[in-house]
Length: 410
Image 1 (cartoon, rainbow, N blue to C red):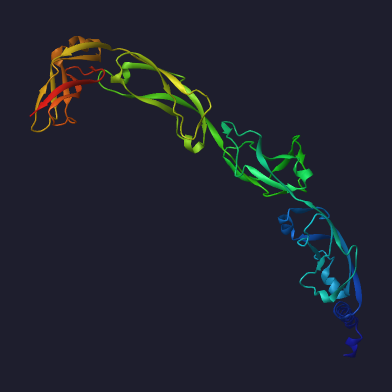
Image 2 (cartoon, rainbow, N blue to C red; image 1 turned 90 degrees about the vertical axis):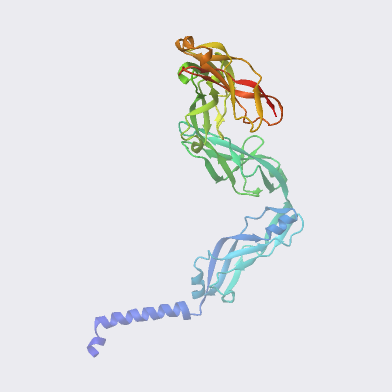
């Protein structure tokens, strides 16, 4: 055992134990009082809401800092580190008038430090001085500015905000100089509608950006929406109702303009390739026509072309129109139990079809049949709609509308 005590290993272990014991003594048992210098502690102000409710605000002194010299046991100050967790707080709620005010402040230590274990030896200032002025309020408009351009084939719509105005407050000389709040949105390469909260800049009446550090705003951001619309060229077209002698092959038509360019949400224009101007019953046209029709714009789309109407020309090709007189007049759907007599004795019928079919027709091929479905059972004369039938002519049909007069009696 004596050999071990005299060995080099024993002496090293003993040295380490002595060093540890000495460190523990210094850090936890040593009653020696030492000091800590903490510089530039910012003063935190509370009670600003109460100040604003009285129409007051701090114009100077809100950037005050305090230097402290603190004493305490070495272990206590070691727990404070460099003192960055120390806070200084001053209360503004007792101020009720403008002018210069001197405030006391409170030193707040971290929760791990009991204030009885430290002592404030000195401070760079023992009171905080602030200058209080009247609070001036003003509402300013929100304006937008777009930078960049959307991707090819897209168009930016009108910018919209969740609020039209912002309330600002501060010293009158600063607030009075503000013209508006400017929201800037970058549209470079965008293909989808932008919806986001964006910060803003305060702009003076000369168009310059203003340092807003001394001006309060009731909001920090503005919710902005910029629709990004797809640009699309759509054909203008007609839809036709056909019948013998009045088929799509029997006409030629033009529409001017033949297309228009619109912009709209991509989802609403997806799959849309044409705009239907109107539905045309060819049999209702008695001759070649030219007329103007309004262009219906798809819901939610904008007409970039600016043209609101189109000129339509319809002409007949490969067919002729002739008029025949027929006495073959009858009716269907007569009221039950009533007597019906036909007043109309003959009808002039206009037919359209290939010349060879028209040449072969005579009165015996043409029938006019009235429909009494909607006729009252009361005695009297009634004009009823009639349909023209052309027997033996597959590609020939009547043009226009017809009616006959019938008489109902008991």
